[in-house]
Image 1 (spheres, rainbow, N blue to C red):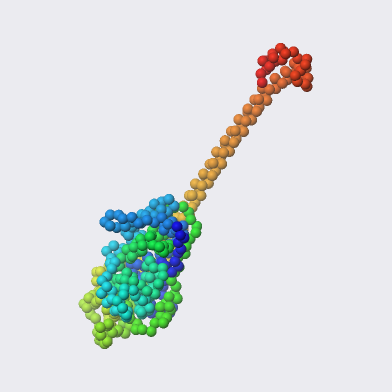
Image 2 (cartoon, rainbow, N blue to C red):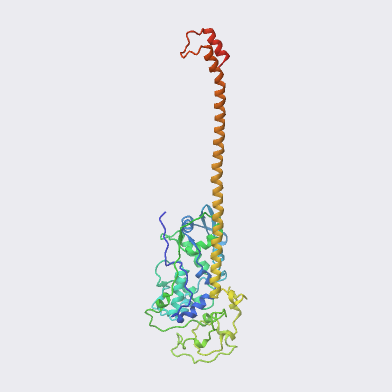
Length: 430
């Protein structure tokens, strides 16, 4: 089997911080921090090279009930089966009822609203034709969640569907996207070590059954240079984020003052008209009906968002739990503490496993050595006893024979009669 390599720009760790100079991207960063894909974007486990190599060297795809597929692998002698459901569970995606595809017409319409200008009707889109905040979202999804390893400046309809679902407050089936990518890579002619972060997360459920490995792979992370790169060379119209994205930007997680719609961009013309809509304040009754709209923000004044009525659909987000402010998953300090505790627990668990193995190995080695020593001592004791008995048995025979033969040094003894010699041999056998 040919050697497979890692792809450094594939399955990277997302950068969801807000350093100085990134003010234009705070809205999209806050959205991703509060989204249901935050865990899979930022989790960075210790990746063991041997685990990833064994996974891809032994992976086979088998059909199971209801037309579903199952990936079976063997790692350190342990057979492990993975399905789309197990990917969803271990990556904490919670998208079983999500969308995996959209009609082509809807894809074209929504991308047009995002500011994309079409030159043809192909389902391959160029990342650079969007404004900076949209580019940041697309770039993050491509490098962190997609199964691509080349052609980072363009994307296909499945990524376009994922972007549209995120932008319009719909749940996209990222678990299916990831699982289908793994299935395709199993029999691919250009097979590579795909999804090292996610594969390690799947294997960690049986990590205690595996052998101890030392060689690790470090997944690269996106950096703050990303913000300046997103603005480089852009000269088009800056299309703001959809209203549905901005709603999730304010869960009140102690990350600063709550933003209002007043802080957004100036009204942008809709794709079908060249005149902006006159800005009007929205009443509390009108606000809920606009939560699900896919149109860009066209108002410059509205009540504070914390006073706005939010539809029940937003409660499906996995992080809308009644926790204290410091424990909210979207809180930066809470996230750091959670990551530190998780890493500490993992290290302690690895240490316990290592000590147990060392103890078993020590007992095994010392037990073998002790057994060998006991057998050697027994052998020497038996040999010593047999030697001592032999010497004592021969002593009277030699002394009496010498006495009878007159201490002659020659043999046979000429002075000794034959019958006397035979009598001595009978009396003192050798």
